[in-house]
Length: 332
Image: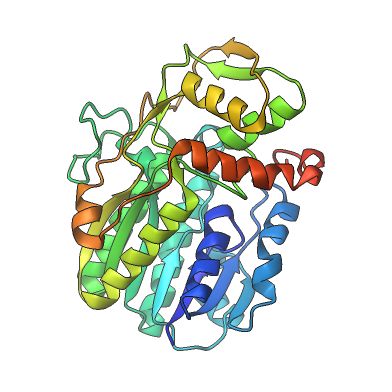
């Protein structure tokens, strides 16, 4: 039985991933610090079904406290792999709190890697982000694109720094590593601050949707089940190829313009959107567009969920949770 540690397990992607790993027969230990970026109540809901599973255990701990604190908090198991999703999220807030992003995402990752080194755990899948590409002129985004001078937000910088750290530990301590760059993941349980969830709330409340810029910016929206499938395929690849170090995109390879997304969300929830145009936000990139060629070649990764179907599933979840409207978009 494969034993995996999943950091960020109470989050949107993390809870879906834990459910998939359990369905595949793994033992899963989840770790989360319930960062107040969004309300703890939502994260606790994500864990409800997981807590009832006999092969799942959960630990509330903070990576910033260091390797010794992790050892004290986590079950003393023989971990086969670590999937590191925990991070302080969001481009915009990182402009307001850059030091907090470095502390959580860079120092926290360093502590996790040190804990792995001390415990002799040699397999890591690290969740990176399409944000590392910045406004690169190379479209679609390929993993070999030079990125050192591309990051345009502290969040992006923290994620690229995490990739640099994983290479250091691969080089020094022979860790097998896959950096997976996620592209705008959406679906049931999506974070409340992200566009699709925020738009659904506003539409249901009869409020206009803010459009930053002229609405031509685009994102490569990727359904959560497709992202999770890519993670699991990446984990299997690492276990079958010890000593490897790779970086792959896990996107949908189909950018959608902001105005088209708003129309699609409106169709999914059955409300005609009203728009309120606002100035562009600093730190936002013009487009994201994943080249999935490498992920398909190495992992067999091929996303299957069209946007309309993914939004239908999101809307069904959202409509089944009327209490969401009473939960603040952010805890602070």
